[in-house]
Length: 395
Image 1 (cartoon, rainbow, N blue to C red):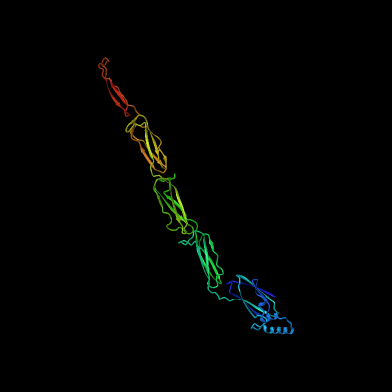
Image 2: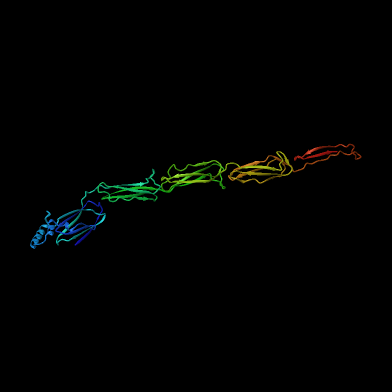
């Protein structure tokens, strides 16, 4: 007859003893996890082993010896019976389920009591376990890469049965708790809290004042930075300070950055800043040119020329025609560049005289006979505003 039982072990795997209390069994096999631990010869007493060596020549003698063994075998503990009354054998178990099988081969009416006892000293001290993150967090308690948590276990008593494997944590998040449990009969737990932020902060830049509709400023520009970070937050004091651009130039740029508490750096560049603070240049030319303070006998045309070395000319005056008469006349024009700078020009004074001068001739009266007796003449010059000369004659 074979009896099989399954049992589980949650503690240490060594320090156990198989204990068999024998009540008359002279032959049996006990197997643990498929391996024989006790064989039939382990159950036979001294007398039983001697009887196997007899030639059984005398039947009466055999019967007498058999009766004697039966009477003493269940009670005799001095080793002179035909069975071994108590057997103890050290055994090792395995984690989880174990199986024991008992096969009885002895006479009917005999029995065994089989026990597996923990014989090693009881370990009541829990193991030690520590959790170590790699890389360690920075001074702000944050990581910006994946973290490997390694567990280190120790037990001075029965030894470590289970120590957790390393854990790799790559997901972002704050207050992530990673725990591990060490088992050595007793258990101990260790945990570490991780803060992981692998995303750089968002940095923005703005300028003041804004550029005009044509993309230009005609004065200094202040660039200011701002930053946000959704997880660890922006580390104080790491945001770039405002920058003032006061020099002229096209497509100027200003970089800025900020760092979050995890050490991630975000950056931005404010580009395309155009500053032109210089006035454009404008000149005027008169045609015809009467010269300073001079007069022209025809309308005068004022022609304007404009230039700008940086942003360029936005507006330049058209030609002006001055046709009204007068003195101390001027022509005025204004130029504007794309940055909004203006410049004016005024011509030198000039005059316009479009009316020719008049001339009269005076003749003295004739005598009674309608004759002139003396031929005299005189003349004077008349100068017009435009500078032309006319002569007056007197006869």
